Length: 110
Image (cartoon, rainbow, N blue to C red):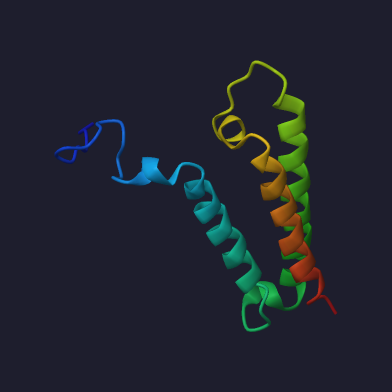
C-alpha cells in the first residue's frame, strides 16, 4: 500500500487543515448526513412517499436510539471505540439529530 504524503505536512494528516477544525469536522460530516436525510424526505424522492416514509422514519428513530444506547453502554468502560470515544458527549447530539430527522419523515406520513 502506498502512503499519501503532501510536502510540508504532518504524515499522519491526509487532508491538510483538518487538524485546525478540531471537532468541527464531525459537525460538518454528521450535519451533511442529517441534512441529506432530511432532504430525502421530500415527496419527489422515493423515501418521501409511500412506504419509503415509514422506512426512513423508523430507520432514523432506531439509528438514533441505538446510537445513544451504545454510547451509554460503552461510555464508562475502558473500550476504545473509535467514533464514540472521539465524540464524547456530542454523541447525544448525533443520536437526537437522527431522531429529529425521523420526525421530519413522520410529518410526511399519510
